[in-house]
Image (cartoon, rainbow, N blue to C red; front, side):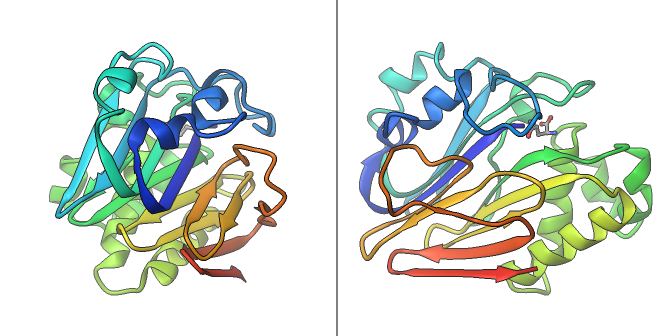
Length: 242
Ligand code: GLN
């Protein structure tokens, strides 16, 4: 089950955010501590989105530890808001760049830790409610890309909290047992769900971090219980049961 990380705070390079701490996202790619039985390493690619005047993104199907873009390019890219992910492809899903999070659209970036049980048959009914053209244009034939389409669609008429809760409830009803840790950012705020997977937050007046696993031993990390939705920005953390 992939690992993801959202950061909003003082300007940092994308590389600094990916490598921050003893248990950084980089280390979580080969030595994660809390995968809860969902895979062992996160070596099937990685990606990062960062916000400036517009959103930008880099993704690669290589393990994050071997892509020279990390030291050579992502060390030069700086932002106050970064969303990054390392991937462990679910069995049967393609290992390719287009399947790597984050998925982006407009000012949104999105990532998913987990899997949809019985994909794709289990969620055919949910797909029927989505625009055909969007389904034809699905970025990758994966559960995560589909979830992004469903969330994007829900965001048209709903707040981020409601959109994430609606999609989680709908998919869980159709495919019980699915693991649906979703992470969404707009460059100013982060939203994340815990649905049968790990998530922690580190929020103070200067920064907000939402991460699959704490990346250091800072005692301010807060482990988010299962079945909750988090809204975070510097100086602000709300954790609500779904
Ligand atoms: N199921 C998704 C994929 O294969 C996410 C994988 C994960 O969380 N390990 O891309």
